[in-house]
Length: 418
Image (cartoon, rainbow, N blue to C red; front, top):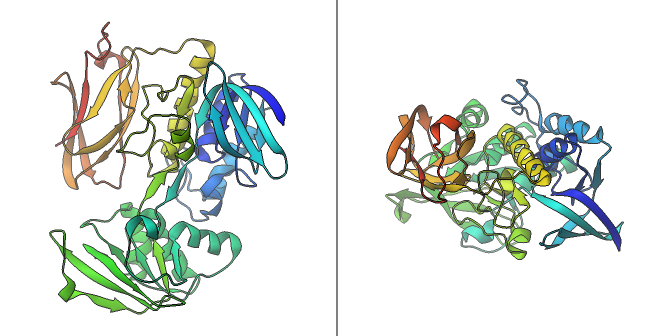
């Protein structure tokens, strides 16, 4: 067994892990990055379309170009060690945390660290998660898998496709499949509104004349050895209208039905998880319920833009640095989701400093307003031109907005959308 001691272990070498590792290392601390794939970059490596970096770099980059910025930054720092093709399967928390990494090439590594950053990203929901009736023919893919097959491996998954779910990956794949010669018959969305960004609806569906069926679902998959078609059923007020169903002949189904933070490891070693996000409960410094264990990026909550993943992960790293210096503050106060808000991250705030928050709306509304109350008293209002569940909302509260109190839990912050 290889044994090593380091200041911080970062689990995951995608956009979140790279941003956190780079910032921690720049402060002079040693960092070990564990990445289960054979190269850094995570899911960005297969996202060859543009649209990345508009917020962060003010440039229109592809996924690999965006990842390269952070890979280069990490590579320039001598105090970062990267272990590729290494999976973190066990963590023993304590005064000093122990992470066990497993690799076919390098065997078992035991790494003792003062801090851990969870940056494992998220995974796609699959057919088993949504329970579509029918047999189990070939031709059913998650949208991300189809993206990898086309962009990395050079395979075309089929000829005639139906996409279930209007998440951003599904929308982008509608365009990508069309470009490689496939016919995309429809995108079917169970909600009454799209799940992806508006720009992707326009650029990936409208520009190619691909129909979007809102308030519809795929109620059956047909075919024995290979998919031969699907039944699409409309919904009215949540009820299935079977009499109005219709069939589409296709040989491929792409599922874009949501992402889930990849927290099997976190759950295994006792991190408290938030049922609303699937990620960890975190305080204002993005520290989990286990001291010294932090979380950021899509493993904490699913983001809509990678720019926000990097922003959040660098903020997380700044708090890791505080922790390593012995300057971390634990007197945090609760944050709750109010009317029309699914969740707010982080779950606690810290007085006398600037706090950054991310949230998801439960409603679709134009000319909405964000309302923040402190123990029921309004303290901040922010006008929002448009909100919808697929688009993340972020805002900051300055130190002057958050009065100091000596009693933990006394000042409860609530965030609502009206």
